[in-house]
Image (cartoon, rainbow, N blue to C red; front, side, top):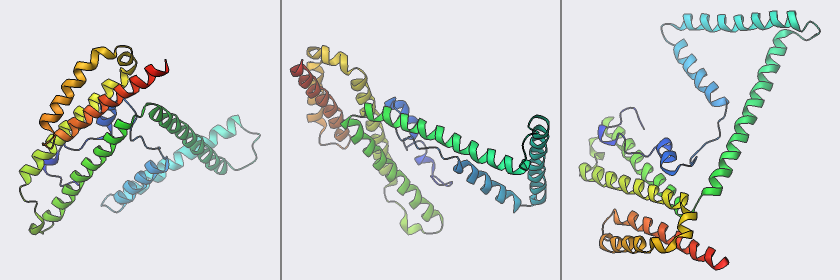
Length: 243
């Protein structure tokens, strides 16, 4: 979101953290690249160097680098006298190897997380995650439009903005409800399979609700909740026929 995001958009987007809490799965987990924090640090450093305290920033940064190098050089001379290569080359090699090892650890962790996610991913959850992406994209588009308007283009103002925001709030609530429903069914699938007869009435109730609300916007996601339940029922029958 941009810095000038309007108050009525605050909290509407479904963040990665919230999505992970709702699904209890590491969804949207990205591979951590150690170059990213280095790039961010470099940007911040260059930004401060261009400011009024640029000379101070350069002096402090150089002093820290020299201090680290001197400490490293002293350690090498005390405990690794058998080394013949210059200490500054050794320091660079250690930084490179250390970075490679850390990146490998991040990669293995990412692979393991992807494996966990793949093992627990259901068709319904996949559909809901796509819906979340589309929902967040709409909010992002509105935010960009707001920034264009704020830059001096009043003609791009969104008409009936309050109704648009209200519709987004309803959609958000329905997405959250559908995600919670999917998680409950997924995490209790084994129990549901063993007690299928207990959930017949629940499925009928969901179906009735869907029929009465299918003409409404939020009824679409209620239909998704019904589809999740029906998917589980289908899996129950399939597993029971194999037993």
